[in-house]
Image 1 (cartoon, one colour):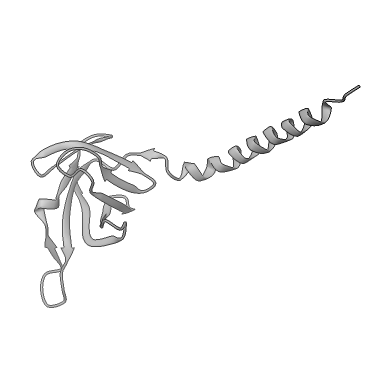
Image 2: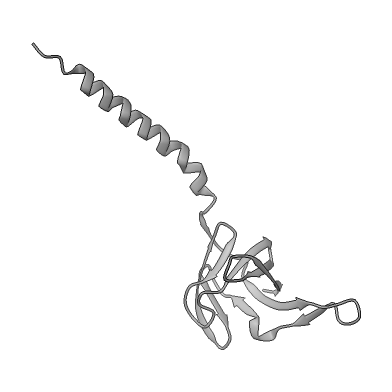
Length: 126
């Protein structure tokens, strides 16, 4: 007579282990939850220097967050995604541009390598 309890036990243990692994992976993915950016007009600028202006406005880079997923800028409108502290314009005139939120109302543009550039955007008004 054959006993089939051992293969069934091994499968059960494997399933329990996989379930535990899935549960421990969940908190890490929570860092990348989809969120929204504070609505309002964001004025962009480059830092100035000690001999001149504190900041050099870059009006062509300004944008407005209109709703939970819509923005306007450069004469057009589009959709954005905000996940894990990174704002990415997914459609419209700024498609592909990414910014890191430093704090509420303050963003830094990311270059192609994902490093912060000198351009900063500050929420000016609602």
